[in-house]
Image 1: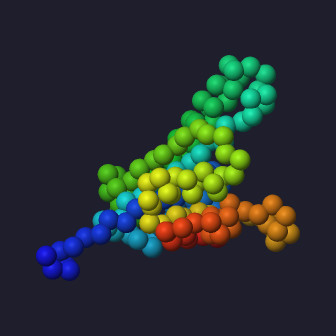
Image 2: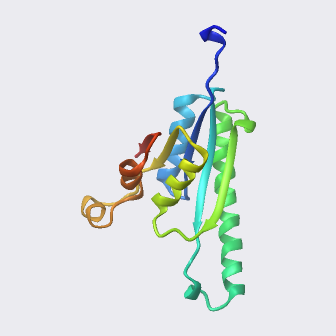
Length: 156
C-alpha cells in the first residue's frame, strides 16, 4: 500500500458547555479542519451531578436534570451544525452527554480521553483572572498539566 492510499483516522474530543469560549473552540476546530474526512469529532458535556442534599426531593432533582439536559441538547445540536456547515459529515460527529459527579471536571474529561484514546482534546479557556486561576486553577490548565498521549488545544 502506498502512502497516498493510507488514511489515518484522528479522533478529537471537544469538551463543551454553554459558554462563548466553548463555542469558539468548536468554531476553531471547524475552521481549522474544514471537514477533513480523516477526523472524527466527539462533542462531550458532563452534567456534574449535584450533591444529594442540593435538592429538596428526588422529583426536584429529576426535573432539574431533565431541563438542563434539554438546554444542553439544544447547544450540542447547534455545535453539530457548526461542524456540518464546515464540511464534516454528520456520521463523523458524535455527541456524548452524561451525568456524573465530578470533583474535578478536568479529571472527568481526561478519564474520557483515556478511555477512548482520543488523539486531541480541545477546550475553551475559562474566563478566569490571573489571580483566580492561581487560586483555583482552571479546567484547561489542569488538562494541559495532566494529559498524556494526546495533544491539547486550548482556545481562547
